[in-house]
Image (cartoon, rainbow, N blue to C red):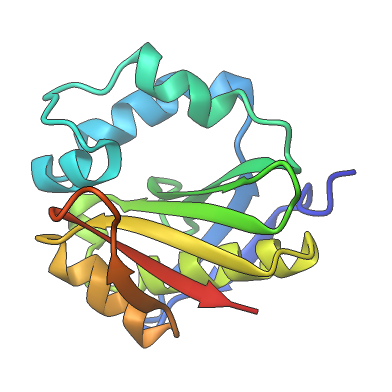
Length: 171
């Protein structure tokens, strides 16, 4: 079942109007171009790797989703059609816990896009009946950690890796 198939419009805190829709396999090249416009540090935080270019091996899991246990949303600025964010939800087999990840294009950071995409992910998680969602962040990713804390996520250490933190939101 695909409860998120419909496209929707979302307004950010800074009044950026976004069209949000689930990813499709044909979006691979669009995502490859998108990640060229994401800050290097944000790519490193998202993929936990220092790769300068994000290619097929990293993007394939973002477009080859089942739209239930795994979903990836794309957000487009309705004013110019630009892809400005991607937000992924990957649920465990029992559909109890989902891991989330959000990336925002560099020139849209600080405009409420990440905030809006966390709302989209939260709604998707609740529609799937998840008990909680988690985000795994590099401890140096202060902006993401603060944003997630503002949205009700609780931080805790990541077992076995002091460079990471797990943020959890319970429904």
